[in-house]
Length: 534
Ligand code: GDP
Image 1 (spheres, rainbow, N blue to C red):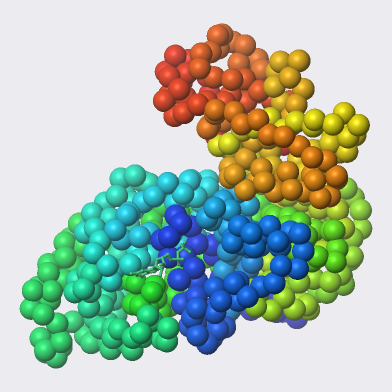
Image 2: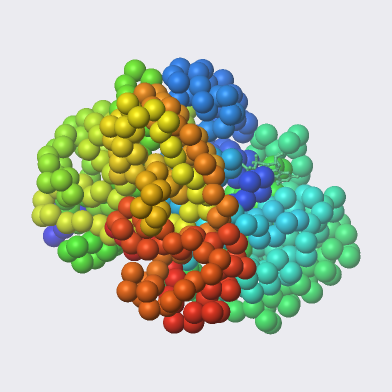
C-alpha cells in the first residue's frame, strides 16, 4: 500500500509539466507566453503581461536600472493550469539581458520549447541555447512561428533543424499556405484540418473549425491549390519522415514540430495539447546518492539562480530553487549540503508574474523563490532526511571579457570582498591573468548586462567604484588535462592563457577562426566549452 505522501507526490508529478522557451530575440517568445497563459486562463486578455511590466514602478535602485534600460532582469516562473495539468513555464531571460542565468534556467527545466521565426529559421541565440539543452538531453519541442507572414518553406525548415542541430524532426501539424494565404494547420494526430478565423490581433482565443481530411466541405473552404499542395506535402512526410518515436523525443534526439502563429493564435492550443501529451514529467535526477526519483518522500531541491534586490526594503537576495523531490512546505527546516547548516525556509515566494504572493506548498517540478540570507550559491542542494547533493551547474563559455580595476587603493578590501562574493554567487565568472604583474580580476560573462550588474552592485552594495577594460576575445575553452596537458602542447599562437577561479587553465580566443587554427595545429589538445563543475 502506498503511503499517503507517496500517493500525493505521484499525483503531483503525473500532472506537472515544466518547460523553458529557447529562442532568439523577436521570434515571439513574449507573444507565445501570453497566448499560452490565455489558454491556461491565467490572464484574460493577452497583452497584459507586457502592460504590467510597463506599469511597474521603480521601487528600488535595482528596479531603477531595469526601468532605465527598459528590460526585465527579473525572470519569473509562470504557473498555469490546463486540462488537469499544472504547467510551469520557466522564463529564460533572453534579450539584451542575455546572461548565464539564461543557461542556468535550463538546468531547472524538464522540457524545452524551441521557438523559431519561420522567415529566419535557426538563429544564433537559439543555437547556443540548443547546445545547453543537448548537453542535458532535454526533450525539445519546436514551434515554428509567424506563419501569417511570408516565410521559408516548411520542408526546408525541417531540413535545417535536422542538418544543423542533428535532431530528427516529426511534424505533428502542418501548415496550410503561408503569409496572406495562411489558412490553418493540419493535425496529423487526428487527421483533421483546423481552419482558423483571424480576429483583431488575436487578443481573444481564435475561432477554430476542425474538419476531417476527406470531408467534402473542404472544397468550399480551401482553395484547390492549397488543398492539393497539402496532400502532396503530407504524402512526402509520410514517405520520407520517420514516425514519431517518443523514446527519441525524451532522449532529446527527435523534436516534434508545430507550425503556427502566436500573434494570431493559429496552432497555439493544438501545440499546447500535444505538448502536454508528449512532454516529460519531472524525472529522476543524478545525485551523490545515485538517481533520486521525484516521488522520493523527503523534500530536496537545488539553487539554479540568484536574484539580487527584488525587494527594495531588503538588501538580501532571492534564491530560486527547483523542487526535485518530496513536498515543500512553508517554514520547513532543511539542511544545506555545502555548508552543513540548517536553514528555515520562511517567506517563500510564489513566482507568478502578476502575483508574488506567499506560497504554502510546492511539488517536484515547481520552482520556489526564497529570500536568501546570503547562504545560497548557484548549484547548492538543500535536503531533508538523508544527506545528498545534486550534480552542480557547469560554467558555460563566456563571450565577453574585461579587466575590472579599482582606482582607489583605500577600497582594496571592499573590492576584493565584492569580487569574491559576486563570483561565489555566480553573478559573473572571474578569471585571472597568468602574468604576475596583472593582478586585476578578469570578468568573463556571456552578456553585457552581467558587467553592468557587477559594476552597479559593487558601487551600491560595497561602495566601490570600478573601471572596466574590455578585452578583444570572444571565446573561452577549458583545457582538458589542466596545466600538464597545456605544457605538453607547447607554444600556442593567437590565444591568451588565463586561469579560472579554481586555478584551471582557460584559453581565450578572438574568434572561431583562431580557435580552429589552434585546434588544427594541436590535434592532441582537448578543449571544452564547458568548465568542469568547480
Ligand atoms: P520576443 O522578443 O521573442 O519576446 O518576441 P515578441 O513576442 O516580443 O515578438 C516580437 C515581434 O514579433 C512583435 O512585434 C510581435 O508582435 C511579433 N510577432 C510575434 N508573433 C507573431 C506572429 O505569429 N506573427 C506575426 N506577424 N508577428 C508576430
